[in-house]
Length: 181
Image 1 (cartoon, rainbow, N blue to C red):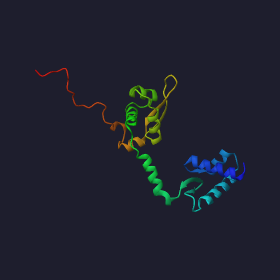
Image 2: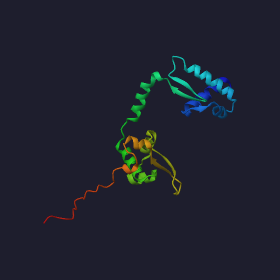
Image 3: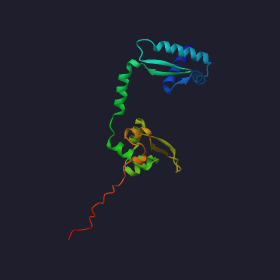
Image 4: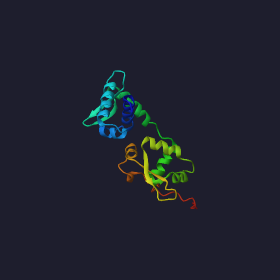
């Protein structure tokens, strides 16, 4: 691996990782000496200090993290907020309701309750962080199960699932079989 390839590989790993990572972990991943990776990290650090870059490379004790420059925080926040603030459509709300009240549940269960394909709704809820995979169910085919996340609780102002409103209201319904005489 030449120097440019090493630089590109380290940059790709930092981007994909997102969290701070130690140089020795990066070196293990690319199977190169730690000193070679540290040289690449320093080169990236210098590259990102240029005025025409919106990124920076943070050196946090023994770890490194790719981040956006603070001067762009407002526009980054706006674009992230607009992505999160997209309201849920009826299909997504139905899917989320099925998961919240019955979790952990498989996609097949969700589709059985809703009566329609729910792949798109499940994908959207996963992307928004409102649900997550909860492992595999002990059923034929070992389907993936889904559950709500802490983000779901925070977004809906709940401290726990026990705070979900009851499925059926406690108010007595009018009995259509009784007639006034």
